[in-house]
Image (cartoon, rainbow, N blue to C red; front, side, top):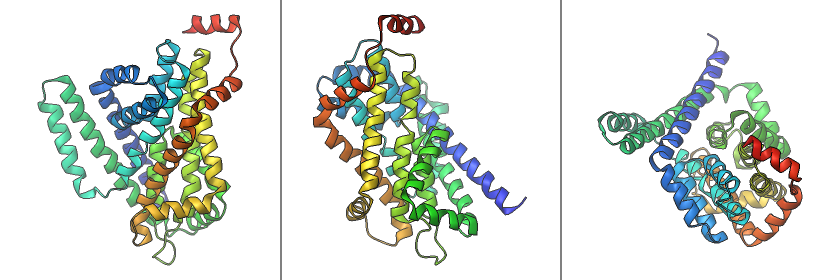
Length: 337
């Protein structure tokens, strides 16, 4: 088997392990705490501020902004949540989802197998279903990090390949290309957490000098912004065929990420300096994964702080973008539901 084919299989296998671990961890956490999280969302989203906090907390617990957004769209469809409340929860969900990138930035290679063993032990020995699901979540968490290690091993040979180096150089010097790349990757994989994890590992590969990153923070940020745009497709798909306010909730998710990405891309040099200022100092290859995670958190936190007081503006914007359906369309929607 050639080196290129081996690297491709390694990338595919590592990504598969990551996605499988991520999906099963999210599903197990939803099984263990999903009903409580749904009740929590319904109770504490009376103001935009509490809505943001609720979205942040639920997404941090469930490790899936898509799950939170789909849950909110379901509430809006059922008439259990008003549009302004739903928009605030979506803002918070965007901040909560950055927890995954922060976890990925930790070096847990030595702890992967103990985590896997502890998780499967709890799953096998526990009698209560909720405890079993928590054990499965821990096991899936270990599987997620095992996938990251496989990705890292597969990317090491790629860093020396001329085609890969030339491609990374183009991305580094063409921010728009990086934005489109990140958007396309997330649209295909359907997980911004997975594509950001791949980005963190790709950016840690050394360039020709063996000291500096092949991509660098300035080259990684546009891809990260594209990841944030691509992740909105899940909400859009979940809102298809739903009532008008549910589709407006999905539109708010798109407007939030798209507006923030465009502004940050235009202000890329300042964004780069801000991320460097709040991140740990050290050799580039050692701190870059944390810088990308911090950039992801900063992006969503700043966008939330900007949009939170402008929630009424967002509501008016999505109301114009998604106008009220005609009575006939509403009847068709209710029939499909």
